[in-house]
Length: 464
Image (tube, rainbow, N blue to C red):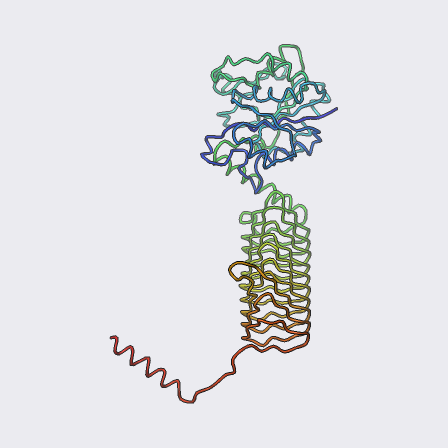
């Protein structure tokens, strides 16, 4: 049986009090609508239609060609929103999931169970429900004497008896596709909100003698719809806990899960250890047997097996196997470290490759550079890559030695095995195995220190 999805993402989200469109607010680094669309695709929905309204272009820009789109120009209710997809899906045979774009915690396993119950019973509609001790604000699922679903009543339309019901509608459904669109034609706006409720389809289908079922999730978190910053924070907490648990069950040691942040799209290999204060974001990939943290912020970076990163910041960087980074290093976009490299404290690397076995141990800047194998870059050495208008490249070949406090004025090349003496400012290329000295010869003036001190003291006395 074919499967489809309609993702409702047209609401403005006024309660978020934000310039950012509601469904684009991130949960664990990924916009909510991204979580939802990924989940429906994991249950093999071959077509996904996103209903957009406010912020339509921003949603399209983010999702791009991962979905089809329809526009709900006026927000007249959930039933009206789903109806906008009729031209795309109305003639299809199959099962259609309808889900809100602000429910990022619904899992693919729950949707699969919902679909299986629905399809195995040839149901017209199946509702995803949850039990909630305090159901205020949620639609109630009203069951008959045989425990079958009779209808769903929105909070504002509840009688006192209905208001006491604790089984709530999560806002996620599975419908027989053609029966869904047929029922939508009969939905009216005769209610307290004067909106066209999708929930009215349940009663319409039931009155028509159709089978209407409910699947109750045992995870309360899946029912959370994010309408304000408090709910966003709650969703973030549940998602973080879920992500951390997944990684730990896959063999990752997280010393303190409460102080560790892992984004939804991060991949981590077995036997890696994460220390407190670790923040992993974007499409970061970390290999096996790594040690990350404490207090490291890594985004969109790749770290190979056996590497370590301590008290450091990485953005769009690559770190080779068994390489150590930090403490207090900064790898900026384009930084590519080979295997067995050492990048130490207060070192910044930008748009530069550092090949296997090389060391930049402390207090250095390597930018727009190509550094070969087994190179030693001394304390305080920098590549001078910018003249105020243009960036130029520094090349250091294998086995070269760059002394402390050396300035390499790009464009410049240091040949294989060359030795650059500490304190030099290099403006011309150094050939293979050459020794380069670019500093003034030292001159000592006997007793002159006393004259300098006497002169300074006299000046101070005059001014006082």
